Amino acid sequence: MTRSDVGAVPAAGGGPCPPVGRLVPPASRREDLVTLLLSTCLIGGALADGWAHTNVIETIEGFFTPWHGLLYAGFTGTAAWTFWVAYRRRAHAPRWWRDGWPAGYRVGALGVVVFAAAALADLTWHETLGVEVGLDASFSPSHLLLDGGALLLVTSPLRSWWHTGEGGLRTVTGVGAATLAAMTPTILLSHSSALLTTAPTRPLGPPAEQQAALLGVDAYLVTTVLLVVPFLLLHRRRAAPVAGTAVVAGVALFTLGMYEFPVSQTVAAVGAVGGAAVADGVLHRLDAVRGPAAALRLPLAGAVFTGLVWSGHLVGLALADGLRWTPEVATGTVTLSAIVGAVLGGLAARPAAPAPGTRPVVPAPAGAADDRGDRYPTADRRAAR
Image 1 (cartoon, rainbow, N blue to C red):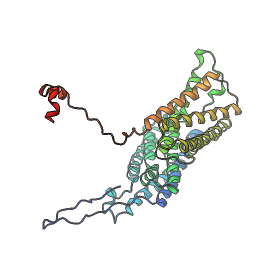
Image 2 (cartoon, helix red, strand yellow):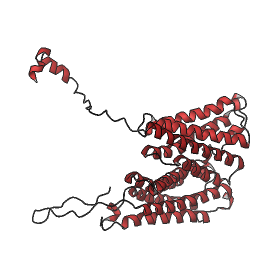
Image 3 (tube, helix red, strand yellow):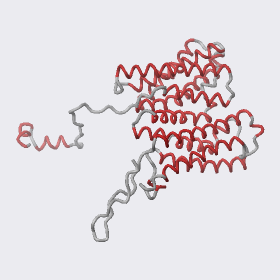
Image 4 (cartoon, rainbow, N blue to C red):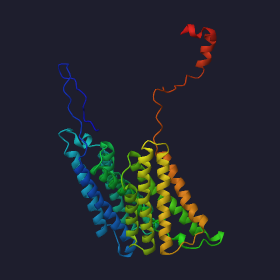
């Protein structure tokens, strides 16, 4: 929790004064829900701007566009609400701008500052250098900072959920915030998205001409990280129903929406969402059988989730256009992605706790054992204790 000047201050007569602040209460369920809804407007504005950059870029001449208006309206609403949440706690923290943030929202306030600074830089960039096209838009420094600030801002309900440990509506807002977190960088990663690639539907060709297939495999690996990290953040804290399905569906909606839902990729995305739903069911059952503290729980979750999502995606592509990758490349891509998911799960796992009744071993300083042995012969050590 956040504290505000809770220590006792010496009074003029030498005695302690009462504390000048109290514990700041966490955000309520309603506050988290409002934050989630406003954050959804922000990400919706980002989707509209991404669609514009993809489809009507030739008509965009500067910073002041309807799509930027939607984006910055969503940001303004979310930012104002985030600061209002702290201001409402001024009775608990008179210096509310410093101490009034409920758990999870201080980082969101930092996101507001980063986003606002990036917006000013983006305005300057657009008005002096013009509108970015293609990869220029994905790698523009101001866009990268906008994306980072938005990521910090929209995840406030996720951190609030972690802090309270509650279920019910808290779980809904936590999973929703994690889904928005996965959608946020999608706009800058469309050049490497497996949800847009059709590489598996084209023949590999001779070894000297397999660059397109290699880029397709790379897209699966990049998108694996994008999907698995937020899923593991949810699954690590507690098993949340449909967490994986929500993350995959949100990223698919954002990615395909920018490109007006091409048929083949949309069918494949439906297969990926179906694979995520199966993974949610399998992992829920595994937790029921093995327990939430079972060994290798997160590596197994990362591998199962990734393997089923991309298996479903390839099945969807096969139904839409037919697979022309060799069995080795198709199944190897799923296997390699599952290995990446397992490794990420291992990195996300908590260190094993020491067994009950054991004491941690503290190594002696270098040379201490030799000195003790020199001073006290073996036969006399017991007497020296």
